[in-house]
Length: 287
Image 1 (cartoon, rainbow, N blue to C red):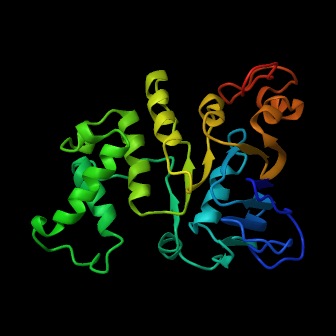
Image 2 (image 1 turned 180 degrees about the horizontal axis):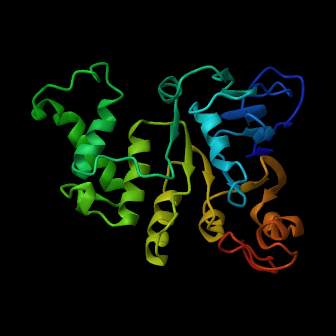
């Protein structure tokens, strides 16, 4: 599957992450990724190219292999076969923290924050993770002054300025999801993987997370798993659909919504509705 203005063939003889046309490498590339758990194939022969600055979505029924694919891209899992490249560099064997240092960010379905710390403290620690003294934690809080200012600026840019002093445990579920995105942004990624950022949100909270995602820097490459099609089509340019670990459809969001196979996978019959919020045929207007 391919995404973005500089689409490249999904298969071919180029080196991992390379562009067979000789152009610049994609921001993120996977070649024939496969992950087996004993007799179960969770991801089977998935290839993708995501161009720099693209907004790309991945959807599919529960159990389709979406999060396993993300785990392969981020290094949480090693592929059985296949390779992953970041801006042309093969990162298949690198541990997650090495991929983060190269510019690959990630959020998770399960909340991963320090609930007893404030929003500012959470963001400051994330920023501290980029410093050479990141393992030196037994130091006065005042020594983090530069990072706390940067944390406040980051929260202000993305709508959490009024919650800087609040403990993470006091945040609403929607605010926690926003904080998770900011924690990933604090690591200054070039490519950001978002795993269901709108999961469990109320309608009002979905509006807030959508506004945050749409305000992300244009140069940031975004790959997002999301069941809420309304949120997804408000952010991404194109998407791929996974089923039983394989890509069964890809294209613009309008094409995805009009794909009879996609609706059949979500509903069990062709033609209407679906497990993903908003899966229905597009008949007109803007996607």
